[in-house]
Length: 411
Image (cartoon, rainbow, N blue to C red; front, side, top):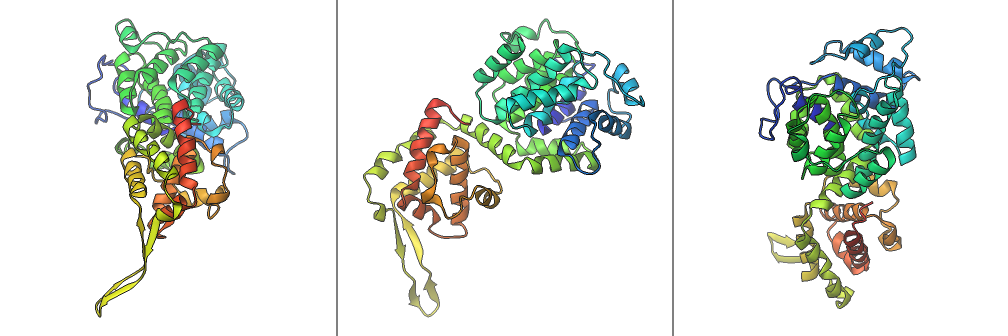
């Protein structure tokens, strides 16, 4: 969801002064969060539930918008009236406001069917026109698919088949002819194009701004999808959070904490996609070496030793070259992504059960999380990596991972 907020902040200063280029200062003194952020955070807060969340989302959204009555760019005219109605009703809108607030749904739901249903509910309290609902559902579905490891080709195919969007134009083709448009049908396909054309999170954001149009909302939608696919660089996370009041920062952090494992997986999917082939080749090239190596030779222990009265060496493992080569390849891969590995192992009942696990049932991201846990645990327990190799678990993991990477099956 933070990707949507970053897109909103970056695009805010270009909403009424379009900048049809990808070169610009990302975070500027004239940037601010807008109604897009407020509504997105309201959705996230409601999805988390709690004692203060009313059963009807309409009431909850009204409460949030009344708390922040004067965002940069203001609320739309019809929506402004809706905010203050005693008995708010949908008003047949197909504006892009339904799509700009929907990002949290793509993270919180457990299936495509649930994603579509909740997106319809969230959109329909105001934007009950079929195009307004479709725009929201398409964005939520793209986020769900991206965070669960689907490729851009798979995402595009699903969006075209399920929602009928024409997604064959590139940003270069759209940019010269695109005009300001506040509708879902005139914003969502363009935001998807920026996501599809971008090579990383920041690149997607820059492409979205360069299209023009309703820049804050278009870039908000693009950023939401790009986060689920690429993750967000830490410096951009920190930059965006500095624009937000404590009330909004608290909800963003709570939402990310609640769905931590899903954000972890999305980060792994993103890194897996950009890990160079040469690194994978280094890892998978170790498989035949391991097949020909006696497991007992993979790790030996040097016993304690007193060299003199002032020097004592504790027992420590010495790894075979093939183990050190794997450690080096993993370090170069960028896959050692920080996450709460202790809790993850406990929740999955993985701890101390490595030889009992069916590694063929794990996704590419889960295997990489196992690797991260091994490297981290080595810092607290010498020999963890060596034991994993010696028991034959590493070769099992590498075989499954090689197949996953070849087939591009990250989920």
